[in-house]
Amino acid sequence: MNGNLIEIRGLYKYFGKLQVLKGVSCGIKKGERIVVLGASGSGKSTMLRCMNLLERPTFGEVWLDDNLLTPVDPYLHEEIIRSSRTYKKKLAAAQGKDDGLIAKIKQEDLLHEKNEGPEYARKMKAYYRQYYLDENLARAKVGMVFQHFNLFNNLTVLQNMTLAPVELKKKTKEEATEKAMDLLSMIGLTDKAQAYPSTLSGGQKQRIAIVRSLCMDPEVMLFDEPTSALDPEMVGEVLDLMKRLAGDGMTMVVVTHEIGFAREVADRVLFMADGMIAESGTPAEIFGAPKTERLKTFLSKVL
Amino acid sequence: MTFAEKIEKLWDLRGLFAESLGYSLLIAFGAVVLGFIIGVILAVIRIAPKTNPVIRFFDKIAVLYITVIRGTPTLVQLLILYNSVLVWFKRMPTNLLVPIIAFGINSGAYMAEIIRSGISAVDIGQMEAGRSLGLSWIITMRRVIIPQAVKTVVPTIFNEIIILVKETSVVSYIVLKVNSVQKYDLLGMAEKQGLATPACYLVFLFFAALLYLAVVMLLTFLQHLIERRLKKNER
Image (cartoon, rainbow over all chains, first blue to last red; front, side, top):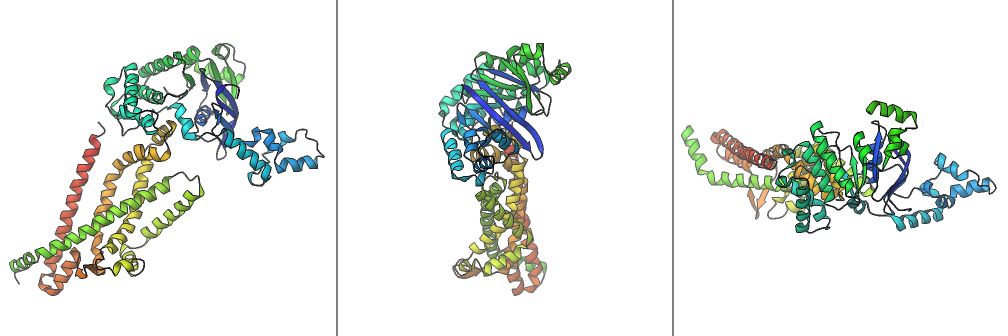
């Protein structure tokens, strides 16, 4: 899988009739820091949430470390389409000429899971068996930070951090506590270990939410507008922590409106519009020489 | 009969009234426990993501159960169960299980709705955070969602318990037996003694009412105690 830590392929997401993602593909390499920009409603949060399956894509596949997290999407695999009854019938009808047939099947969503024949079913199953990874195992490797922090309100800061590693038997209680206290001292909040989230400021909550994810030793961190719900004076402390993570070589995907952060930290910036990645490139390319009209308009509004 | 004589009569019967209050409370307690267990199970089924047909099937059952139980009077349910499904329990020398099961089944439907609303009231972000850390739905439910739901649900659960305690008075419609000896719940005892001494009937009824009131006030006190306890956990 060409060395991508996370790869999304041909992602479509519908909420009822609303099409939020319209065929998004992208790969994220280990150690890469990606910032996703875009107007609200452009699908950037949905794309991020698809990466750890908080949102299930309608079509498309999500890969983590060469493991498939979603069901197999037959439209992404020509050899599977070729084994389908629909394809064979159409091929016979066209006297064995394949020009554009596969594209047509993809385009018009012609496959019907249930009656594509045993060969197709076998291929689908074999592919799934070979690559599938249980979603809970996958999520344990992918940290996520939310706009509204989502600290567990019924648990203390320390319990928030140790719950998952202990429950999932990644660490013993002692190891988890030690790691949590180390992380708390890194962000200067050791005195809050026994506090409940309701007593903390927004900035403190978000920094703890970040280190809570780190307690699971994730391979990649996803940030869903981590500073959007913060008072302005608290944005800095959260961004500083994120920069520090970036400096330590953490793979990060950050959905944000913080242009300054994107410029400073990102290896690559994705600009999303209308459920698609409209433009991608280094910060210099994106901010210095935007190609599309949409990006130019967007930048003129936010800069 | 003067009032003083009536009170004296009541005083003579205090042991019987105490015993009958005991049976009322025993039935209510058993029903609350059973109702709570049924309620939690139904609520979790109702709230579970409907991803597979087994869960969808149980969800339909749960909806049917809740609809039927909430849609028919408790007394009717008690009498039907007493004479049909629970007939085996009815014939045992001690048949207290009949009202316990009947009221438990009844209360379960209400508890299910109360608990479900409590779970839905917990911010969806809490579940997402749990899942994003790799915790399963069940573990997140148990460690994060339900503990928070309990807090919002305590007042309404106590409301249901209070209603249940008072509603046990309809067991006087059926024959209670302990070791083959007929026994009475609180209202049943007041009725029985009232028939024996009609002049005292009203006094007995007022006394029964007073005892119910005392129990409910005790429960209310307990509720406030628990609420305060749970609040302290937050700070």
